[in-house]
Length: 198
Picture 1 (cartoon, rainbow, N blue to C red):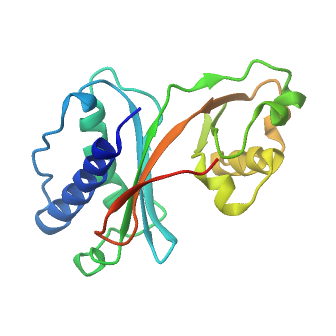
Picture 2 (cartoon, rainbow, N blue to C red):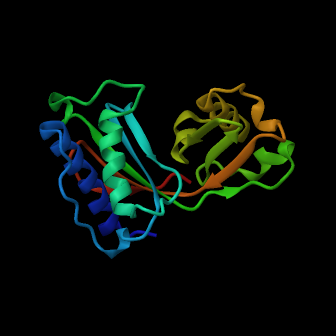
Picture 3 (cartoon, rainbow, N blue to C red):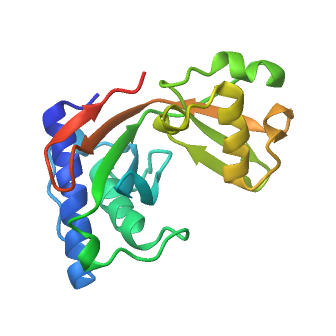
């Protein structure tokens, strides 16, 4: 678990990286405390007026990348490499709100496929699906924001992966759960708070 101080630093670092990269095309050198020296999963989410503007990250810890390095790369990717959106422009920088989610290690659900909704807690769990070559991920805050129940969460996870919404019930589908510690700007460039969604 990160402290609010470290979470604030994570969000401010993500913003600084985005602003520098958008302005110069080069990411700045990032220096973070020891809490960020370990490998870890992380996502950076950008929004404007509560509408998604970019979201990219690393669901699993990378052996060759620290959490701090993954954070910086995810920030650049969220601003410039999300295929759903055009690159962030300079004129948008003061409108964008930055959110950072630090992920726990994903764990495979080992129950029978039909019982999967019973083992998912909305507000606690994020989900990953692996279905052959298809993969999809939804962060823990997503079903809360969309008022989904566990079954709807699984269905939308499948759609995110580009497969049939009922594919989650197949034995072939592997479902992983993970937790997320979320830190967000309360306003674009403003103070940072830890977001509680449970």
